[in-house]
Image 1 (cartoon, helix red, strand yellow):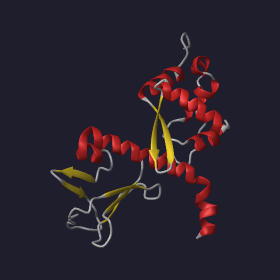
Image 2: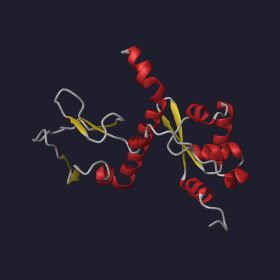
Image 3: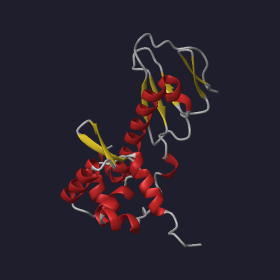
Length: 198
């Protein structure tokens, strides 16, 4: 098992973890904004929240399972796409495994744009970091992806956070950084066609 992990998963684990942690953050925001209805609305068409009951249409199983106060653990997994799986066996924590947003693009190699206009205002390093933050990422992950030193990334992120362009959220021992809506608008604007171009 250890050999399989090293060969098949370890090289891709930072990317998988970033995708799943980003989805957890997204789901937490949906729950805070609109409760259970909003949390489940875009998870899967076969899933519906109705008056305190979560319904999952399935061809394999039918019936009801009461949670009886045990809660429901939502677990994003890059390995269940495109379906949702539920585990509601009495002796285990009730769990819903689902594909996180972006699973379909998980294995694509994609170079992020480094907007020159934004670099002219913020500096190249900070523009590169904003462009790379398409989803929540740690300092270590950003350093690996950009080639910048971890110390340099940390300094840039501190400045971007002070300017309201980046937010930080703790996930266990890791701090994940994400673009704010202001930064999203800046990156989108500076990535568009330059004025006067056709």
